[in-house]
Image (cartoon, rainbow, N blue to C red; front, side, top):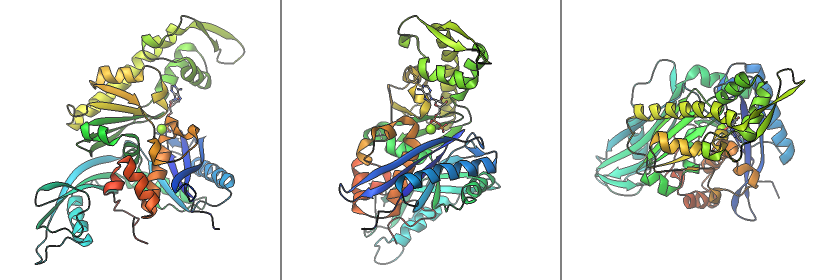
Amino acid sequence: MAKPNLIAGLDIGSGKMTCVAVAHDTETNTLKVLAGRSVPCKGLRGGMVSDIRETSASVTHILGSIERECNRDIGNLFVGMRGAHLESFSNHGTYNISRMDKEITQADMELAVENAKAMPIKNDNEIVNVITQGYSIDKQRGISNPEGMEGSLLEVDVHITTGSSTHINNLAKAIQRPGYKIDDTFYSLVPLADCVLTQEEKEIGALILDLGGETMSVGIYIDGILKFSRDIPYGCDLITSDLSRLLHTSRTHAKEIKEKYGVSFPTFLDEEGEIPVPSLDGRSTHNIKKSYVLDIIQPRVEELIEQVAQCVDNSGYRNFPVVGVVTGGGSLMPGITEHCVNILGLKEVRRGTVQRELITSDEAFFDPQYSTAMSVAIYAASLMGGQDFARSSYEKGGSMFGKLGRWLKGVDIFGG
Ligand SMILES: Nc1ncnc2c1ncn2[C@@H]1O[C@H](COP(=O)(O)OP(=O)(O)O)[C@@H](O)[C@H]1O
Ligand SMILES: [Mg+2]
């Protein structure tokens, strides 16, 4: 029997890339993770290509090792990108059905979306993706698929992401150079938010925060609709730099100390004890108090979350999110959710990873560091076809593609 198609979701991170490969498991009729990898990449800065050769080398390394592990070629490759050049808008499109029969067709829906896309875009920028988030017919809201229904006025809510053509083209070149073909590129926060937040959270009003090394991505859902998404060009590697500078140790050791002993809130300081810190040349070690590490980390984490608060203020949606979900590597820092509650004024904040009902996977890939790559792969699988397994799995997760999701660039989701 032929092996099911291998779909790869590639997360272009800050100084690294992460890939998760999924396929339809015919035995369980679910989507299953077959392999996942994360590799450092010196050619990426803040999600953008700074060295095309280095980036291509990392692409070859990561995709090649995934193919070897799965013992087959990647059939479809979807790329999740990020970066401060990306901008998102929510927009509204309308279309009058003037025909006698008034039965809404696919073409009418596409025209409503085309109208929603009619907005000014900066020079040298292009539309990265457009997601439809719900239709209304003659002012009746909450219609996920109006095809076949009757009406005179069709309206649609969309979330549009635009980005710099230069950055997008450089990334595409770096991936295509080793011979890989890209099926589509998304702003990775969009699938991430969709796969990590529950439907209840999206409805009540939720903020998602993806804490990466050199970027933080912020998304806001209100009334079940993604209203805002934005990248901030700072991230948790700043904590590493602070530790390295103030403890006189290499970045590698500083990162290790952060990830092993770091806490950002006093209540997480379990016992007063000492931590060995290797000197810069690695020849000797000195001991420091754990509380000193907290003293270095806490102000930086507060500053990062204040940046997020500012971003939320500027979004105009400050008073809407009630709950928060943090994900990404930085979410593993003990105390981070407490800072989010205090600084962002949210009622409740949890750590999040991809909802388990969306996919079958080894526990290792439910780690927040894999959540973006996994979401891109899940999204990609939903785009790849109208297979029942995909549809039912997304409906269970209550995500937007299950209900109505259509990405309007590049791929025909339910077509051939
Ligand atoms: N256990 C941990 N505690 C604190 N920070 C962590 C931990 N694990 C990873 N990080 C940090 O998360 C950041 C990387 O986030 P990640 O989502 O993996 O990467 P990307 O930037 O590609 O999105 C780094 O700054 C890393 O040091
Ligand atoms: Mg990440």
